[in-house]
Length: 58
Image (cartoon, rainbow, N blue to C red; front, side, top):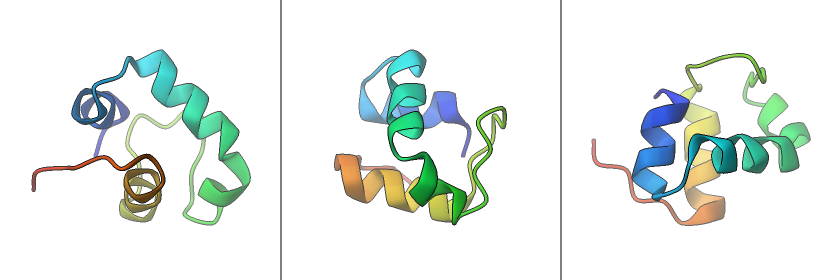
């Protein structure tokens, strides 16, 4: 899932999503997260959805 898609699903701006990713950088690195990636890994998406209670339609 792209960062912009996840931000839209969360109802926040892309800037806010990037801040969330920065705040959780060490945890997201376990899922292969890189700050410059536009596409998030499934594990990173799952982590962010659980942490920030984001419902993603699949």
